[in-house]
Length: 359
Image 1 (tube, rainbow, N blue to C red):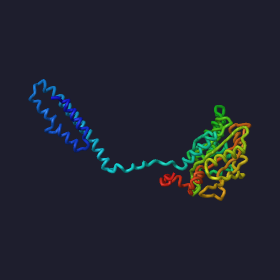
Image 2 (cartoon, rainbow, N blue to C red):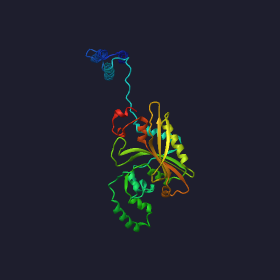
Image 3 (cartoon, rainbow, N blue to C red):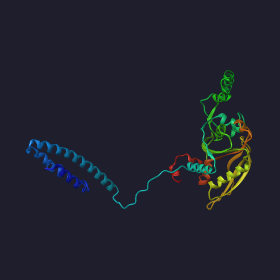
Image 4 (cartoon, one colour):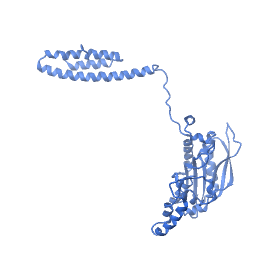
């Protein structure tokens, strides 16, 4: 009696089993009460002791192995049959996999990064929680300057009020001035806020880098103001800065016109540059555009960007000498609204997937 041959026959017949019913019949044939292997085990009582031990060990081992094989095969066939029952039409095209969509602000920011990178600008980022010094003072907007009203600021409450800090600063400065620099004193008593623009990153960058250079700074900013179709308490802004020994408004004009032509692609675009005021540039200007496409024409001029030549006091704050440069700022949300024809800025932030899936 060859136990090995029984195993070979079982495996050969098992490979031909196409459904659970056939598999169960095969299991009964070999492992059932009247099965072939069961018969072998029952016949051992009539065998000599030595043969009984050998065949008994082999038969028991094969029985456990076949039980495992039949169980695994049954699970595979049941899973396969379940899939066939769920979707019996094998000729039907497969269902389209649902994929995510990039947020329109993400799409626009990535496109902006690519355009400026192709123009040899470096992409720089900075903290969203800023100090009063970097957000205002170093940008030629000292305390009580009327220009601060242009930036409705979220101040952080966890710090002392300005009057107490001022008196404490005077008292402590006299005692530890010999051990610490004035910069350390300033940082210790600095007021913190949510940045109102990305311009503070320019100061941070200039403190650690020497010109010439050209950078853009994309990021989120915050303003304490009422929300409506064109205003939000937080939005995204892009700041640009180019500094060198002979940088001029002519360079600025070329860079900005080149950027907008690439950003709006096949649209015809007109530019208009108007004088304006920003405390950290002199002279300052506004950039207006007028777009014309095959499907629409914006007959009115759109105010799109503030810019100008960097104010000398800003360079003094970072200890730059004999250089000049231009800076500009543009709202990423505003660019997205114009490019995609979005009427309300609040759509970017309400989390409605029906809006996101359009992009």
